[in-house]
Length: 357
Length: 245
Image 1: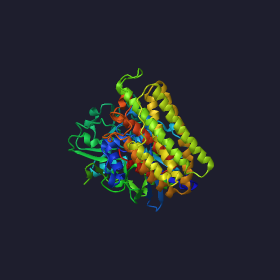
Image 2: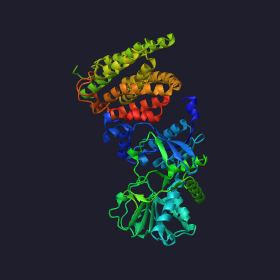
Image 3: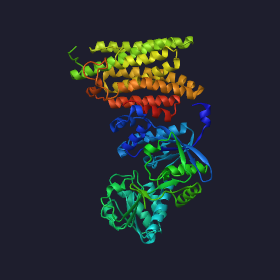
Image 4: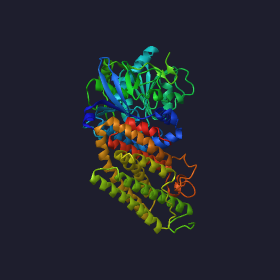
C-alpha cells in the first residue's frame, strides 16, 4: 500500500468467524446487490470456505471519555462445521493469515474472537507478535462471566457461598480463570472437562488450596448437584439433563447453543455470558449489522473482542491474555475496571428468546 | 476418435483429459491473442516488446499442450469463439481498443492467470506422469507473469486509489462474471463450445477432481492476487460475493 495508507494505523483488529453456515450465508447475501439475488446455502458453502481471510469492514468505537478508536473486522472464513481437532492445522493457518492481514493494516492490537482464541491458547509462539500485539480476550470474557454470575445470584437471592458451582470446560483458559477467581467464594466446585488427566491435575490444585472440589468427565454425574453452572466449553456434545431446580446457567461457550440441548427449561435461568455492552456505541463501514447482528439490543459484543477495544482505549498495547492458565484475578479485575471506565459494561441478561424480563 | 489410449483407464477418463487439454489450449490461445492486442496499447518500446514476448510465451504453452495432446492421442477441440472464451476475448478487446493498458493487464495477468494457475495446479496434482509435469511447469511460468504485473498494478493503485478501484471493479464484473459462470456448477445446461459430449465440470471425478474445489482454489488465488496488489478486503469480498455461483 502507499505511504499514506501506512500512516493510517489502526488501533485494533478483530479476527473472527461466523457461528454457522447460515450466518455466513446471511452475511454474504447481505453484500449482494438486489439484481443478482441471493446465493443458496450450498453455493455459499462451495465458495466461501476457500476464500482467504480478509478485512470485511472498518469500525469506530466511542468511549465514555470521548475517545474514538479505529479498528477493522477480519473474517477468517473458518468453516463453522470444521472446528474439530482434525482441522486444527487448517484453522491455525487461517488465523495466521488473518494476523498477517491485521499486520499489513498496521493494527496495534489484535483480538482473537470466538474459536480463533481457542486455536491460540496453546500456540502463541506460532504467531509473530513482535509488531502487533495479540490477545485472546479471555480476561474480559472471564470478567463478564463472573460479574454476570454475581449479578444473577443477587437477582435470584442465591447465596454464592452456599452454592455448588459447576464449571463445564474447567481446564480451558476461561474455565480455569473463573474457577480460580471464585476460590473461597463458593461452597463447592463441580469441575467437568473432557481430558481426565488435566481435569484431575487442576482439581487437585484447587483442592490443595482449601476448596471443596468434585470432578468428573461425565457431566451427567455432576449436573444434579449444581446450583450454578458456567459453561465455558466449545462443544456441541453438552447435554443438560437431570439438573437441580432452580439453577442459574451462564452459557459462555462458543457457539452459545446450550438452550438447544435442554428439552425442558423449567427451573432454569439461562443467560448468554461473557458479553459486554458498548455504552457509547460504534459505527461500522460498510455496515452489515442487519445481516449478521443477532442480539436483542444494539451495541452488544463478545468480551474477547471488547478486550482489545478496552486495551486500545487505554493505549495499552500488550499480549494481555495469552496462553492457557495465565489469567490472574488481578488481570480480571484490572481489565474490568478499564472496561467500565470506557463505558463498556456487562451486557443485560438475555438468551435466544430475548432479554430477561 | 472413439478409441481409448492405453494410458487411460476408461473412455470417460480419456474424454475428460481431452476436454481439459482443449480448455487449456483454447485458454492459452486467448492469452496469446490478448497479449498480441495488448502490445498495441503500449507506447513504451520495452513494455511493447515484453507484451509480444508474453504472447509468444502463451503460444508456446498452447503448442506444448497441443504437442502433448497429439502425442498421447487426445481428441482436442479448439474454439476461440466458444460460449465463455469468446466472451472473455470480447471483454478484453473492449479495453484494448481503448488502449487501456492497465485494464488489459488486470484481465490477462490477474483474472485469467489466477484461474489458469489454480486450475493447472489442480490438474497437475490430479494427473500423473508427463501431463502432470506439463501442467505444473506451465502453472509456474504463468505465476511469473502474475508476479510481474502485481508490481505494476500496485504502483498504479498508489497513484490514485479511488480511480484504480473504480476501474478494477468495473473490469471485475465484466470479466470475472464470465469466469465465475464458466466454473459454476449451475451452468452446465448448454455446451460451452469447447468440451465434447457431457459438460467437463460434471465429469471431473474421472480424474479425481471436482469443479467446486477447482473453482474455490481459483477464486482464492484471485482474492490473494487482489490482496497483493493492495485492494482492500472490504472491496474484494464484496466483489467476490456478487459473482454468480
